Length: 347
Image 1 (cartoon, rainbow, N blue to C red):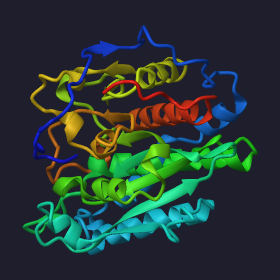
Image 2 (image 1 turned 45 degrees about the horizontal axis):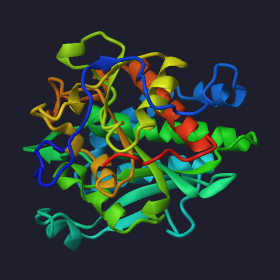
Image 3 (image 1 turned 90 degrees about the vertical axis):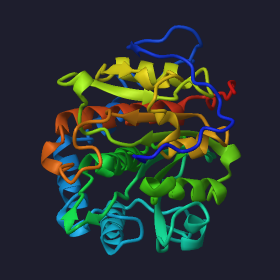
Image 4 (image 1 turned 60 degrees about the vertical axis):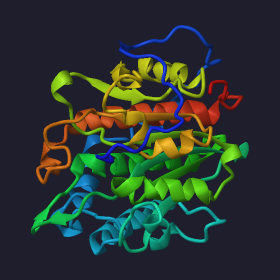
């Protein structure tokens, strides 16, 4: 997650705060996330702590050198991710022509990126069976802060945890498609670069979208879901940020998916507009939100190893990472398969 606050100019006000497990009010229509849904359950169960751990120990290894934007280590991590998708048989968007969307150095430099080299967003794609033109985006940044004074900052939680969660969620959706029960809407698995330096990869994608933003139904963004913070030590929880900012339905859908699966404690602390961290504006979902795309940001909190070289894979709570990734999958499943796309009815 980006450490430095971005300017808060002309920003809308967040609504809601506190902790909840259910939400009253706007109807989310009928849910397809049900315990008896065999297709859903079969895919849901493929998201496993062991596989998340296996991939994270690679993504957050010293070999990747901290994955700084455009660095050889980041590119090596990207190659590992692409090979993962290739081995599963998950393709890239046809319109893109490869898994890579180049993010030019000049684009980043004009936005305060200094002398960063060219980098790449990585995109994998599963086409929907009934409404392929409508796109559900599941995003995470795969860059971190690199190596400083010879010490590798591995970024296992930030955002190795989100990266491997997106990979596992992609596998789950792919399993449903192989079984003839693929999502009705298309799913874009978007791994963005340059987040730590200024949300550059997501800004580049939303400025140069592969699919029209008007057809983008939602962005479910995952940035740090493998640890706990001091306030929630030992709890089965996740912060959800911004889910009712633009749509009256997204928060309701997410809460219903949570209640019918792992029933985590959903914490809305950071939706409070007075919260000093202003986290709604500090990860990649914000570039979708400012383009009127509903978003939900899944986050574990600011812990003692945030942006330190001690953010290592052995400190991840893999069973909790599994549950949080399953929640994002369950939410995406409902949004991708419901009869109508979620509304945008708030500003």
